[in-house]
Image (cartoon, rainbow, N blue to C red; front, side, top):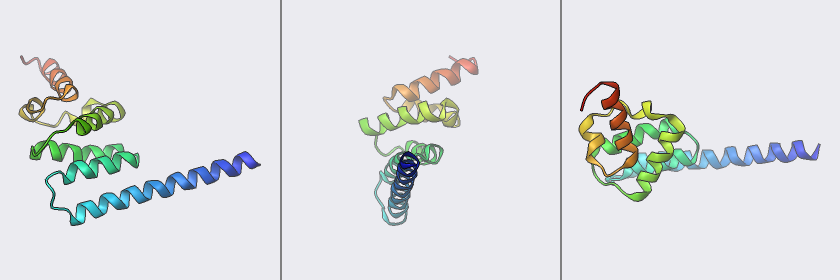
Length: 118
C-alpha cells in the first residue's frame, strides 16, 4: 500500500512540474521579443516531455535562422532520437545544410539518399 501511495505522489509531483514548465513556455511565447524565443520554448516543452510540440518550435527557430548554440544542438539531437528523423524531413535542404549540426546533416543525408539526389 505504501508503494502505491508513493508512486501516486510521484506521478502527481511530476505532473505538476510538467505543468509549471509548460506555463513557463507560454509566458515566453506571449511576452518575449527575443530572437531565441522559439529555442527557449522548444527547450521548455522538451523538459515537460512534450517532444513533438517542442519540434515545432525548434523547426521554427531553424527556419528563422537567428542563432545556433551547442545547447540547441543537444536539444536537436534529443528530439531526433525521441521523435524520429521524419519530424524534420519537411525542412528545406538549405535550412538543413545551413547549420554545423551532425543531427541536421544526418537528416539531410537521409533525404538525399531517399530522393536519390547528390
